[in-house]
Length: 446
Image (cartoon, rainbow, N blue to C red; front, side, top):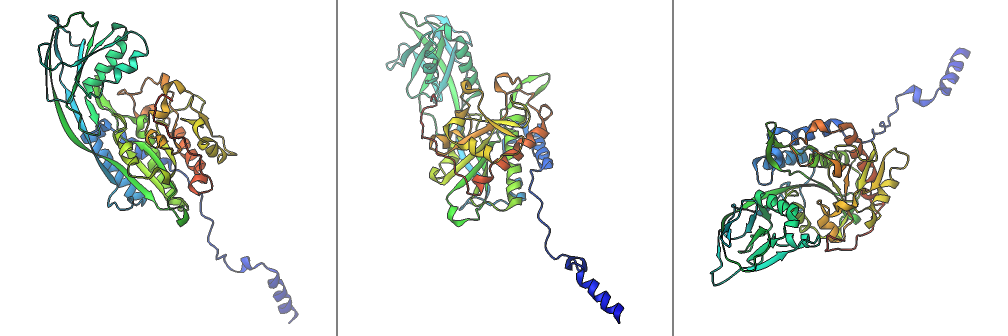
């Protein structure tokens, strides 16, 4: 009997956890950005069968369909009122033929005259009743901006360009050879550029033809609704552009501009972040994930997207562009364009306390990168919209070339950058941080 009493006393001292299994669920694993997703998505987007994801080309459509399937796999929702992830927009692509120009009896060489036209047929002679305006672009550096102001003709204009501007003229000729893209049908006017001085007396015969085609493009947009109804009008946008250049002049037999860094890397980040935040499933604010079309030809995808939102209902925009290589600051770093224009960067860095990762201000202010990516449209409207990048653009010899391929990227570092973006966004996503607004601007030169 004493033995039984003693045994009972001993059992009473054994913790309850030793008598039966703990019924409490195990703590959930911390969400992480999937390196496998990063590798798979970027390899798919930058593969040769995507044909360089050119605007209006079959490879661009194929990329959009792949991204829509990824958004569906992750479990994103279309935007309210939409039935799919594809946000359709129409742009107008124009191509003007080489110019035949005779000035004062002298036939202009192919590289001496360039036309941009919104007219199917251009035929000018100095005997016509209605004459184009004649403009002279001087040798001064400030005249370069004036030269490019005639790329969207609003009146028939004959522009003589001083030979001191030959580099700018060659850039203009290259632009014209690729054709133009516009959000609206071009006006029925033409600009003809001639490299050389304006003669004191002027006689000319100029002709060219143009073809204009409307093209349907698509942004790919999905969202995770917010869990806090009070913050339903405080959207947070994560974006990158999936388009690239398509085909270029062959180099060693390769003509596909794969665009692995520009910007399959940023688009891959958007997919990986969507997967990450879906896994976390605790975002207070609505999160919008968008892959833009037509960045390379004028930012028309982001311009269209911005018109579908009230900018006052966008708390922040994380635009991600070219993160496939180490930044000039070394591994585990990235820079933020327009760092000084809001406290966006400081808020992000605060959430990285204790980590090795650093966000730095844009080290290339002379490149005007803040207004050269898809953040620009919403930034002009006052949204704290910034681009995150690692590219050492002044010395990036692979930029806009057929050699921008996955093999040139550092995928572990790229995955670390995406993980840092995810962690740094935590306060904004949770509604605990709100970046200051950017004063609305309309002038890219500021």
